[in-house]
Length: 147
Image 1 (cartoon, rainbow, N blue to C red):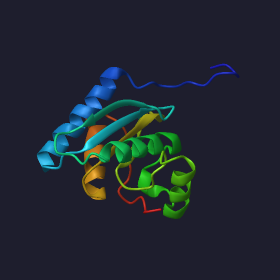
Image 2 (cartoon, rainbow, N blue to C red):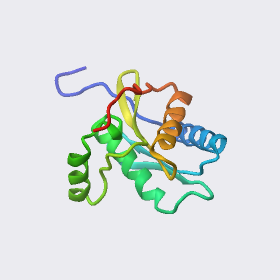
Image 3 (cartoon, one colour):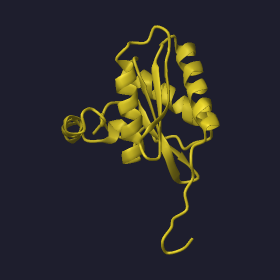
Image 4 (tube, helix red, strand yellow):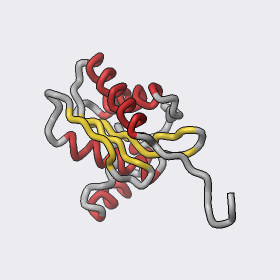
């Protein structure tokens, strides 16, 4: 490392596919079709799937959750709700402080975020965590309080 660079990790397209495949498998197991979005470390959506039967607007909420988790590097529900809703308005809905978004952290590096939507907040979170487990990413503590 030099004084002008920092080490980093990048999520590969194979990683994106593995996350989506694992999320779909968990959502299928639960019988809850979802929208699943993956954001990279720059909070840009790099993968998305709307399962058959998922609510159409899940594409927006899942994407916002993925971008929020990636940009804030924390679970979406850990963001203070009132502050988060203010940020949601000011970012045209790109920040969303609801359950179902978690950062993708590998070896201490945040490589992106995953957002799931169309179930209850708890169902969305369970599916997102299953995807993280499938690629060996850190699983956020369950005791993260609601913001």
